[in-house]
Image (cartoon, rainbow, N blue to C red):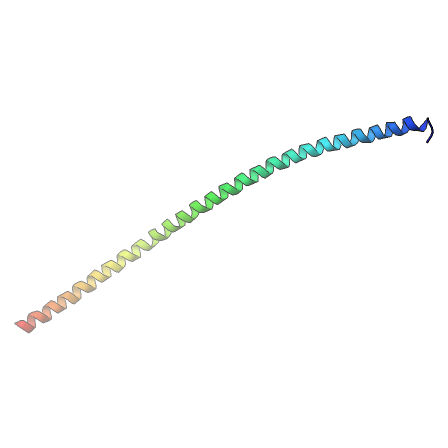
Amino acid sequence: MTNEEIPVALGRHEQMILSLQKQIDELKAVQREIKVMNESLIEITNEIKHTNASLLSCECKISELQSAPGRRWEKVVLSIITSIISGIAGYVLARFFA
């Protein structure tokens, strides 16, 4: 390499260094944005976990409310059957001791 070629080569190297520095700065900005997005995703994931827990709790309460009329109906039927059997038993005992 001659003395005249050295300044030209240095000029090209400086241009490459400036270009690479610009690319590095752009990548740093992208990296910051990715970090912010990652933190947002973590927050969203935590919120979804809490929402799922709330939904599960509500689902249990809804199931309980849906089964309540069925239990009431069973109690009514049991009371009617018990009353009928008691009435029949009372009638039979009254006829037996009369």
